[in-house]
Image (cartoon, rainbow, N blue to C red; front, side, top):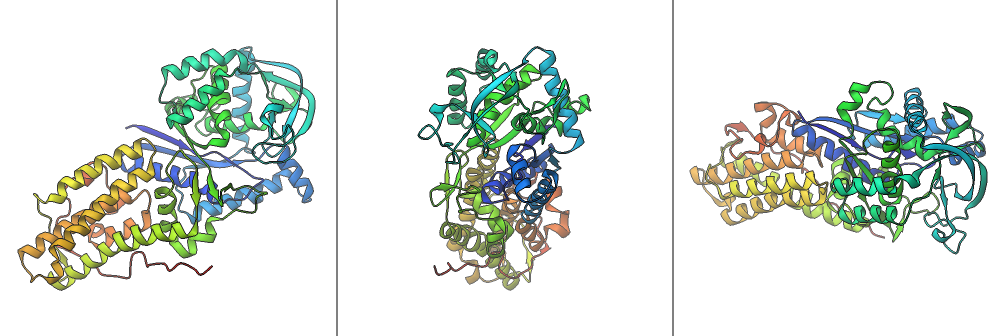
Length: 508
């Protein structure tokens, strides 16, 4: 059995969940669901990042302790993921004792190996990023390039990680592991950052106390980014359960946004090498989800919460849009009108209408009992091709391509129905053949679409009689389950309310 470990970034508790956070999380969830259907042993991790200066200041401003502030926001992420049917296996918080143990163990290993030393650091610091910048990186030499807010000059005693010593080892690692970062444009960006030259970087702070203490010098706490990155190792047993860690590491798939590429594709693999561990096997980097041409942020006033959209589109309609309409890699632009258009075209008109009219004609022409498909149907070859394209796309973390491939079978089946017009046929073998093929196509679509629209896929499965015949959709295993001919016929087919009721665009 293959192991599949997938992670989202851990989300910072100085923000509340919006559709940008949910975009990454829904993709991770869909990948986890897909690999469970393949029969893989899946571990899906998400969580919250709760230390750092930004959290400490925000808590003080609101008359709370940092932990009280973190508790409230972390709970909001759990609530958002429940709303979207996110099937994580572990939700990690960096304030947990297990994480403290893991961070201290990994950083101690790097320290013992001679890669961390004490010094004094002075630099320009963005509190929102929790990151230092050089003046050339700033807008007009004063503003953070991401948050467009003034940076602050910090000077304090720090421990430094000798990142500069890892320039060539990182380049060598990238050369021998070309699959490590994708898409290719993001891999090239990471290599470009390394080739520009690496500077030693601060890994500790003395100006704040809200963090994990260094085990060899408790006057310092770890710089929040090193604390945060190690969550991926904590969750699979680093420092506490070596056999478990060796089972799940390094075959991990990190999903991240491009704004944290440097930390994940340069700092994180270097730190792992310094501690004597292998870098992550896969880092999949996507662009920004823009609203009105701008990245969502706490200060931009353009944030949209998942709960703003789910009441109108449903959980599956929400999930489908962000998986289908936003190609993984480049920036994507969200608009309500585009979401309505995609929902109506793919879900209401194509898939929903296909199920509705097949069930209706089966009720009229077949007494509500679904016939078996034809072994030599032309749709059999379409289904086989769709399986290959869908599987390849999920494997390369391209959900929009996977769903485009799956919907080809929906479109081809609708075209076959339009050509045959079984609603005009008299009951008999000819209409049975047409409807049996359509039911088999619906069965296969339900399986292939389940990572994106799990609830509606289950409903298709139930209405065409498969739940009663073979058990839950989630118990089926790919690729065997999508072989043509799996619909046995003789099953009761239900009519029902529209699977995806059409949405009328709101007046502006």
